[in-house]
Figure (cartoon, rainbow, N blue to C red):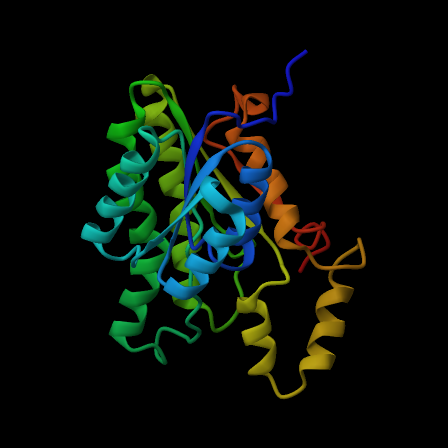
Length: 255
């Protein structure tokens, strides 16, 4: 029986692929046989990640909020490998604040990266995937379902990704393109580390976070990468329009 989780011969584009969850996804995809474009605004980090993976990875520097950069990223993958089978919209930022505290430009930047970026990349990628079908995964968040005070723009962007995922699954299912979302909980990433550093008592906050998780730990980029691998693989050939929560039962426990 073939290994349905193998990605041999497949080509993927992963946004925000130079660090955190995105880097974990890139590394696992390459291990499973895929070639991967690492699309990230952090140029040096993208080049370093690509170099570590050899000829199976390509660094693509750009901003997902830019229509031109998203189109160029898709074209770069096509020039390098001649096809595109998988898109992972992972790039994201977190700008905190209530609707009163947020400046309009902060609100716009938050949605431009987290939501508009997924739209722009999908808009560029889907016409190139129609011939042979493909898979798209949007990395949302538990914030799509459980709101937290002071996260107006972030929560709105992540909830928007769920609606976008469902509609894209309906619109492009006839093209053979499956579209799903992953909703991570607390994951050990630079974004989490930045959040902890900005708190008055990071150690106390981390103890509280750990207490939220029945498994007794927070997630790792590998945990999300494995869920993403399933969704883009042939093992999930009948899964589309779904949102997979990967949070160690944090939201199930009421947090």
